[in-house]
Image (cartoon, rainbow, N blue to C red; front, side):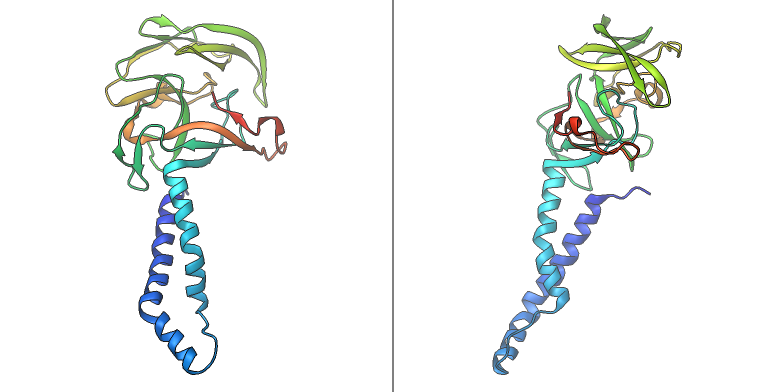
Amino acid sequence: MNIDFSLVLVILVMITGVIWGIDHLLFEKRRLNSASEQGREAREPVLVEYARFLFPVVVIVFLLRGFIAEPFRIPSGSMLPTLEVGDFILVSKSSYGIRIPVLNKKILDYAAPKRGDVIVFRYPEDPSVDYIKRVVGVPGDKITYQNKMLYINGDPQPQLQLGNYQVDRYGQFNRLQETLNGKQHDILVNGRIAASDSEYTVPVGHYFAMGDNRDNSRDSRAWGFVPDENLVGRAFFIWMNWNGEHGPSWSRIGSVIH
């Protein structure tokens, strides 16, 4: 079951705000006057006290999470070696415009994903699920994936062999440094899996996204393009790592995502 935490926060804001507001408008003055007449200290009902305390806290969390940065946890190895299972990341919610939380309606459009950006988006086949991949194609691009080499508009994206990379339970993969849009990032390919060649043209208002673990990623090659309205934000920072099997990886904490 996938929980929409933005919706949960909205509901909490409404409940705490209504309780606090009704008490302030209808009951607080009467309670204070009654206590004064009886010569005792006015006591706030427990429910109202909790609502008064929680309301500003929930509002701040809602604004930060909805418009500034949202935390996510990496559940799979599809973005290895860039992101590992158990990485806790922050996603910038304002990198590609301002959207109204819950409704996901864009109200301010001033930027778009670039090739090489690592993005979080709502999975096109099930928008209740968040996915994370790397943008390799923007509107109008012709994307070709041939012999495990990425071509954009006919130009091969340079790859540099870095050696082997051990993936738990799956053995060793080939680790390559790929240059995309003038920036480097590492990818993995599995030499034991035959190359699957394909070609796509990215339509307007959509993006082509792939996992860095090229032979172990279900991405745009399988389910198509990412619509602009499905964008959540750009992944930019690893603030914690905790793998249930091995515990924390301290060296990953504080890493910037490229």
